[in-house]
Image 1 (cartoon, rainbow, N blue to C red):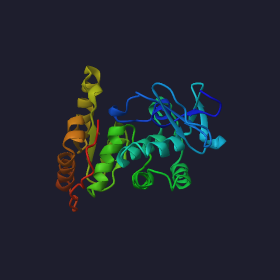
Image 2: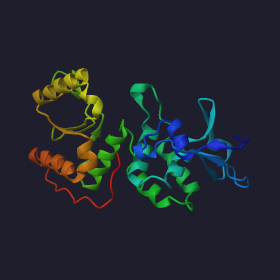
Image 3: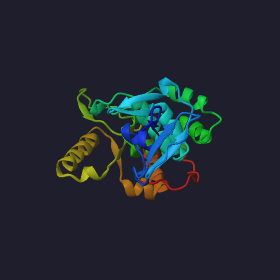
Image 4: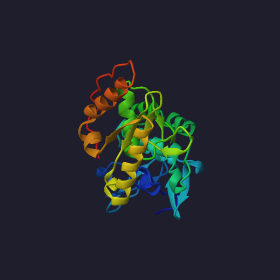
Length: 257
């Protein structure tokens, strides 16, 4: 690395632990150089040039990388807008159960977008900003919420605790519609572990005891049958009193795992 060079794009996102589709594995090392300096070259290196100010550079694990908000703008030239929204959710939420604080605020992302307004990816950034919220704890949760909004479902509470009639904690659904007592849980492959599976069953039964119904989804639903998934959630909501009708999902292209 030369003086002034920083890791950026997918490389910076990986160092920041941002959620990315599997197809964006770290096959290339992305390095950004200041404007006026020749882009970095080398085997396995993808060089870029970009105007950088001191605030755009941070140190992660002893390595100079672009700031979270600048990294997010760089990713807008690579990711579809819905994945850019998922990265934005991570940036403004962090991983509270792993003591990872939010990396930046939504206002920080807006300012970064405005600074880069004339650069590539502006349309994706604007669309993503419409969907970025504090609360989702994983990329599948963020993508699920995007689908629910596109379909016009009511906005759910996100990772908010459900208590029983005595005020004791029952569950922390990924999304919940309290007025209708409908909960949504995305179950990744880690839920197949014996201890996790047993906790999932107990949690679902306790929710049922409190009059809740749980919509459970897997990767096959989210990535393979998103319209069916949204329809299932909508039917549960309507069965519990929601008077709206879901919109037909627009063609947004494949959602990659």
